Length: 560
Image 1 (cartoon, one colour):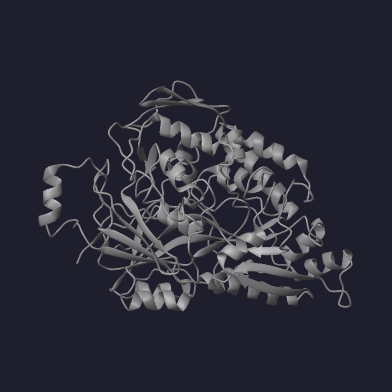
Image 2 (cartoon, one colour):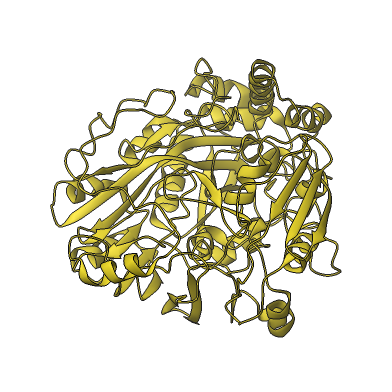
C-alpha cells in the first residue's frame, strides 16, 4: 500500500542528539541507518509452547517472567473507553488491555489479532475475517462474531445513546458488517480505503468490546472497569495515585512476561525526570527533551527513539472574532517563529511543521514553506485589519498545565508581543482543557479563542487530513466549515475526493494541493512533528518504537 512505510526501531544510549538543536530537521523519508543500539529488538510473538514457557523460566540469557513495570506519563487518561476520546495516556494503557481483529507488532507490522489471519480480499471493498475460537474476555465471557458486530454497531452509531466520537468518519466508509457464521465476519466498504486495514490495527476505536461488560458497568465503563481480550487485565484505577494492570494468564497468544504494569501521571517535567533517576520509575513516556542527552550518555538508562505521527498544533477558533477573519489568522501565523519554539522546547527532536503531513509521509511536500517567520508581514496584515498600537489585538491561549505546552504558549506570547499583540496564557489540567476546547453538536466550542496541544496518529493518510479538517470529524476543534466557523466549501469535497484515490501519483498531487489550500486558510499552524522518545532503566528489555506511540508492553521484560 502506498502509505505504508517501514518505521525502524532505534535504541540509543550514546550521542542521541547528533544534530545541532538550532538546525531545522530535513523533510525526508525515515532514515534506514540505525544509530548505536544497546538492546536487542523485542522478540517476535509466536504461539506459546510448553518448551518455550519452561525456557523462559530457567534461561537467564533470554526473556524472564515476572516483576512490576512502573510507568510514568504526563497526564491522567480521560478514561479507558476505546470509542470515546480517552487522551493520549488512555491510548497507552488501552494498548495492553484490548485486541482488534488485526494487531500491530513492536515493529509496526500488521499481524493477526482476534482473527486467525489477515483478511481475505475478494475485491477492493470486501474484508472477510476468520475469527479465533476459544478466546475469552477478561470477564470470562466467550468472544465470537456477535461481539464484532456489537462493537461496530457502537462505532457506527447504531446503538441509541452510545455513538462513538468517530461515528461520522466510519459511517461514510463502511456499508455493512455481518456474521457469515459464529466465527466469520465480513466487512463491506462503501468506497475504496487504503487506510482501512491499518486503522483496524492502529485505531483504538476498532478494539473489540464485550457487550456484557458495557451493560454491567454502564456509564462507569472506562472509569471503574475496562474489559478486553488483551495480554493485560484492568485491575484498579485509584484516582490521583495509579492505574494497575495485571497479566492475563489466559491470553489467547503468548502470555506477557510482566506480572503487572503500574501507571502514574506526573505533569511536572522535573519531577518526572527525578522519578526515573531515583529508580522509582522504570519507563518514562515522553520525557523532557532537554534531559534526553543526559539520559543517553548514562549507561543506567536506555533511550528509545523513532519517527512519530504526533503533531503539535496551535489552532484558532474561527467561530469567534477576531479569528473569523482569515487575514488576522494569517497575521498571527506569520508572527510565530516555529523554529525558535521547537528548538527551545524540544531540543532537536522535532521537525518544524510544513503542511498537514509529517516529513516522513509520502504526501508531504518537501518544497513547502508554510508561513515563514515574517514579523513585518504580520504587522502589515494586522494594520489592514484595523489593529494598531492604539487598538491592539488581544486574545487568550488555552493550554494544559503540562510544562511543554505552557512553555510553548509563553514563547508565542513573547513573539506576538513583538508585533503588538497582547496574549494571555491560561493553563489548566487536561480535563478542564477538554471542556473548554472540545466541540459539541458539530460546531466549535465557544469557550476558547486559541489553543495548543497535540494530535497523535500512526501513518494512515486520512488521519492527517480527513480526521482533522473535515467538517464532520470530532477533531475539527476550530469550526472549519462548521456552523458559525470559517467556510471554504471546497475543502470538504477535496478531502472526500482524495480519500478514494488509489493511484499513487494522483494521490500525491491531490493531497499536496489539499495541504496548500488548508494552510492558506490558516485554521491550524503545525508547530512541529515530534519524534517518539521514551526513557527506560537499562534492565527494561523488549521495548519497541513506531509512529503510533501507543507503546504496547506485551513483550517487555525485566532483566533483573
